[in-house]
Image 1 (cartoon, rainbow, N blue to C red):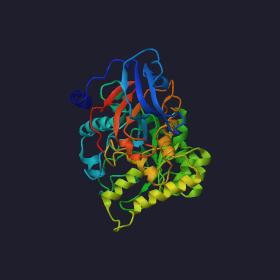
Image 2 (cartoon, rainbow, N blue to C red; image 1 turned 135 degrees about the horizontal axis):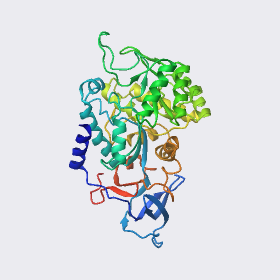
Image 3 (spheres, rainbow, N blue to C red; image 1 turned 30 degrees about the vertical axis):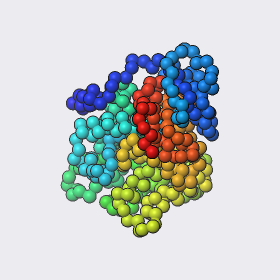
Image 4 (cartoon, one colour; image 1 turned 90 degrees about the vertical axis):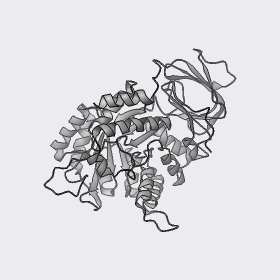
Length: 429
């Protein structure tokens, strides 16, 4: 039923992709240098068999094999962007609350929404995402990943985490009469044996990563507290590593973050209360922070509460966290938490990284090479360099000088194929 719905939606909105990605030459764009420090003026980029073949001055003879030439004069070319924290199975909370999405929306409706969200994400220039939990929608992220890979629907390359792991009584929906067995937004697992079994189940179902909620509210409206012991977190990491699958942790409290670092997780999501000492510990152990600034910004808008002329407490906390992380030298990668806010506006995270203190070159790396390193794909994604996968985005404006330029996407190339072409459209500014 779900597969039929996806296929019908695809036939209605998406032209079929070509059977292969033939040779193509991109002419005249300013091309982001492989080191990310600036742009090469007036260059041409030759693509073949889904890869970048060569890069050179625009007056060079076209690289072989020859192919059609696309004029990108006046545009800036960056690698396909990477978002390490998305939820395609969610839509903005000011449209429908998280509880109502989990409890009232059908799996079929949520999956169809995810197809639309995947297309919007791709059209915004994000060609790879790490999908961090279906929030009650089972293994629909694996199905969507496989449908995109098979060319059935358009969307970014997806690395799926399926259901996520939570401790008993430490996730939503919550606040119901204890007599009722209310569906949860993640898989409940406790103790070293329980979490080991859950990791095995999720990997067998297709998880590329394992996500764990290392802290959460115990009661509605209560504070977040650590929910898994160090031993449980270690058991999760050990079992996942046995299958060569990395672990990502939702963690906002300093103690939960320290436990996650000690256990060996690869990234911390949110990290709101992390101290400078804990952030330095993350640096020492090579643990990457995805601060999800755009989600904090969205929740601030939804909840209100800021006094006139004052920054909302959520945004103030997010700004302070980024400042501490930069001071500690913690590695930072772009993860927006899209789904809390509108899919296709993921680039707001890039803008906020810069607004809150990160240098534009650093923010671009967080969205490209740095994110690719987190995924273990640094040899194939995140750079415009010979041999890399031809995921490319052309935008109006220099995003190292104007962060909003990433919202003005003109062309998206995925695996050497042009999947978005807005050159004939007027500049929206």
